[in-house]
Every structure is written in C-alpha cells, then in structure tokens.
Image 1 (tube, rainbow, N blue to C red):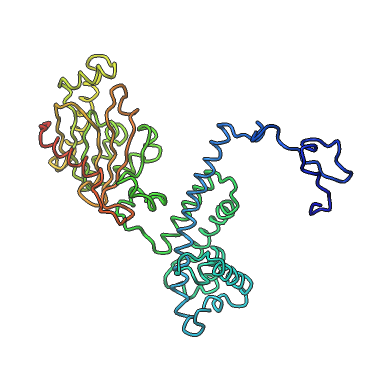
Image 2 (image 1 turned 180 degrees about the vertical axis):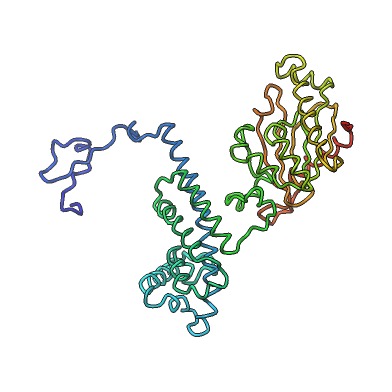
Length: 412
C-alpha cells in the first residue's frame, strides 16, 4: 500500500512493464527495458553537459564570493557585538543581541547547532558557537539593529545594505542549485568585492590596484605559481585587460619583442608622453628590422619580403617621436637586438612587488596577436602554503629581459 492509499502492483516477473493483471486502484510501475539500460530521453548530450558545466562553474564562483562575504561579516559582527553582550550574557551573547525581534531565527540557529553537535557535524571547534549558524540575512539584521555600534567603523550603512541586497538573488539561486546567469554572477562579484572593501579587507597584494585579485585566485593561487590569467590570443586579453589598465599609471615599463604592437598600437603616443612625463621610466627592446632574424620570421609567417621589417621600423620611428617630445629623453630608452626572437614580454613595475607581466611565446605559424597570452603577478604567492615557496615565472622573464637588454644596442 502506498502513502496515498494506492496499492502497488507485485514486483514479480509476471508484472514487469505490464498492466494486464494490475488490480483496480493500483499504480502501474513501468520498468526500463534491458538490464541497466538508460533510454535516450534520460541521456545527456554534449550540449546538456556543457550547460551543466557552465552552471556548476558559475555557481562555484558565486559560492566562493558568498562564503568570503559571510565569513567576513560574521567576524565583524562578532568583533563589535561580543564585547558589548558577552560580559553580561556569556555564551548566550548572540541570543541576547538578537533581542525579541530576532527571537525566532536565533532560536532556530541554536537548535541547528545542537543537532550538529549531536550528529557530529561540527568538525572544527571554532564553529561551535551560535554565530557560525547564522545566515547572511541574519548577520545583516544584527548589524542593522545595532548600527550605532558599527557606525564608528563603517562610513555608509546604505552602501552595506545595497551590496547585501544585490547578493540576495545570488544567494537564493546558489542555495537552491538553480541556473545563475553571467550578468547576475558579475553583479554578485562586484557587490562582494565592494562589501569586502567596506568591511576593511583591502587585500595585501599591492598589484590589486591594476589587476584586482580574483576570489578563486585568492584561494587557489598557489596552484599556478604567479600566473593569474591565460588568454587564447591577444584580442581576448584586451577585452578582459585593456591596454590602459595594463600600462596606465605605471612607474616603470620594460618591454621586449619583435614590434611591441600591444604597446605601440594600443596605447597612444600622447598617452605615452604623459606617462613618461609623470616619471615612468621606459625601456623598449625591439628586434633589429635589418637583422637576418626578421627575414627568418617573415618566412615562418609566410609574409612578403620586407613586410615585417617595415612594420618594426615604423614602430621604432613612432617611439622615437614620442621620445623626442620628452624633457628627459634618458628616461625613455629604445634599443634593438639581433638574436632569434623567443618571446614578447611587457613588465610593468617589474622592480616592485606590485608588478604585472604580459608574456607571449612566438609560435612558428602564428602572428603575435594569435599566440596564447599569460598574465603574471609579481611578488609572493597570494596563498601561503606549508610548502617551501619557489620563485614564480615573473622573475624568469625579468631576468631574460635584463640579459637581452645588456646584449642589445641603443637606437639614436
């Protein structure tokens, strides 16, 4: 007898997939034909798997941001309210802080904590407290109820509430494992970053001003040394990381390549003049347009004879014009080398811990804009691990630049 009062048919072989002998009022249970067979209507094709992966990736990123925000908000609430309520109420300080208005949800949190204790779900003793069982809206309610306590530390209550409002849609979607659009995910990431900044968690990675630290990088950055992004080609790089973001505000710029098109063609000469005039020291290292290495590269790419050398020469002339407009031409150095070109690298503020590098290796049949691009962050790893820290890739390319610069000759 089923829970709805309906009789289920017998499970013997005589009733498999057949309703001929099913008694009146019974529910017929059709079984799939064949041992272990899954019909085509239950299978996932390539498009379905792609959709599932996209959903999981977006939900995972959103969960990381929400997790960071919730942990930070919990720490802030505890730091502000515990000294107020704990001296009088002891371990029940969260219950006391919730007051009559929050009696229902705080008691529910207490009950969940007790169940978690009994079933062994509390894996970390640090989580054995009521505040660890409060949700994001409940933590927000505690902050709003006691805003005068938080006001000395947070400038604008409205900014906090607006950011938390923007996160509520994402929180609902992620908690119920529903589809999260790219637009909503982007909104959640921006709101989370803004909220973490408001709550006083400005990252200790200096280069975050040029290349903001991503939440996923912040957690697993040590898996990839100092590589923070990989792009299939230069076009996709510039969509995500425009030239103004790469070079704007730099105090030092070292670049090596064939024609340095990423800089010359995407960052105006007028902008370079202002950058150098503000104190940025520039060193540009081009492949000698008259060298045999240019001719070999032209053959590799299937270009007409002299096409690449003319392009490099035009870029050098353009940079010479920029240099001629500076009060201190010595701060804007241009040199050429004659060796086989191996890579193009742009090292921005490479002498400090806030450096960023954009690196490409030359491929035999691919022009520079078609080659994969690596973005590196200088300095120590974002995540400190228990392993002995090894040098990242940034220092390797910086050393390569210095060696090539020492063996090159200046352009007058």
